[in-house]
Amino acid sequence: MSLLQRVKNFVRSRSIHVAYVDVGSCNGCDIEVLACLSPRYDIEQYGIYVHNNPREADILLVIGAFTPGWEDKLRSVWDKIPEPKAAIAIGNCPISGCLYNRPHTLIDPPVAKHIPIAAQVPGCPPRPTEILSAVLAVAPVVFKDFEVKKR
Amino acid sequence: MALSLKYYLKEIFRIEWLKKFLFARTAPLGTPTYFRNFPELTGKTCTHALFCMMACPAPGAIEVIKTPEGWQPRIHIGHCIRCGLCVEACPNGVLSSGRILESMFYDNTALSFSFRIDVDTDKCMGCGNCAVACPVNKLIDAQMSFGGRASTDELLLMVSAGKCRAVHVEKCTGCKTCEDNCPNKAISVTRLLEAIHCPEEDL
Image (cartoon, rainbow over all chains, first blue to last red; front, side, top):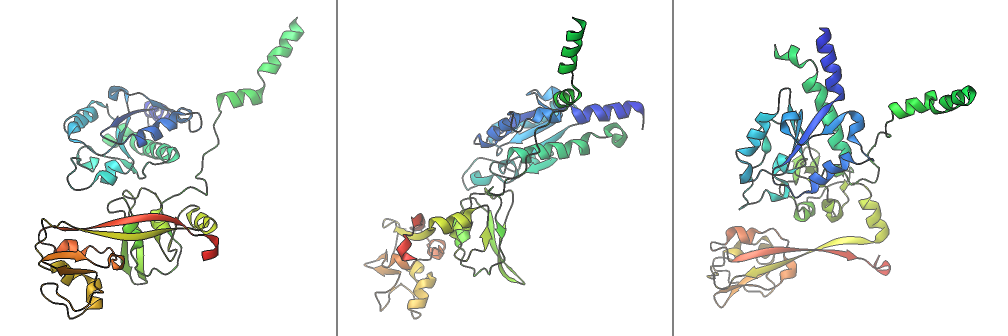
């Protein structure tokens, strides 16, 4: 492994930039993501930073059942994220639609139909520790030796 | 002067303090034991009462499945919202989650089910399909046939004066067979879930 690759691995393990996008949730999971920022859970001590700009992000947290308004927009948000990237579905809604998945609703779950999802965190809402451990579990799998794996 | 400066620097840049300052981590947060997590099986025998499925508010979250060991509730993660209603509703204590079973025991609480049958008299044409299909009716009057006419008054559903009528609603088990068999969607069954507090002397 080249020195450059080793430096990249080290930097990427300590600086994971996260953007979150709410594609129509009840706001419960948004608040749990917000709780990750609080001193009690404190994601920044693990080197995870919240930047709500997809062009700076490595990981996209997708929250909410998929509403028609996001039909073309979620794809464009995903395309703006530079490689290497991963998307994590937070909560039941992006996985199954949860309570909104009933007849005569407009939602279109799962989100995995629209963008590739690397990990799912079930729960309505999930605990902040579960979100945190999902991000920390996905990051090494996706980012470690990215250039080597691509070749 | 030099001595006091040295003293200050030594006080401020203590190795332990520097370590604490640079590599501080909050303690890894585990899940507390009282957390109401996804329901787990306690190992007691499931009697297929289906109260868990009746109480569950999330679509597709719980199913009672026949396994070689007998009936078994299965929680679908990704659908379950961890409300714990199935744990409270189960009459046999098959499921457990967090402290729900303990608190139900200490507080003497339980869930009671009742059902309400509404018939839209504008849509009902008195065909009697609901009364014939009803499994509760079948137990009471096995001879009941086309038209929903019966000999006894003890039935749950019966047709009188060309309209369906719910006579003994307290016998309803909430299976919704009548809803499925109604050609006009005139009949609807509503579940009424009520938390009750049993007084001490009742136990």
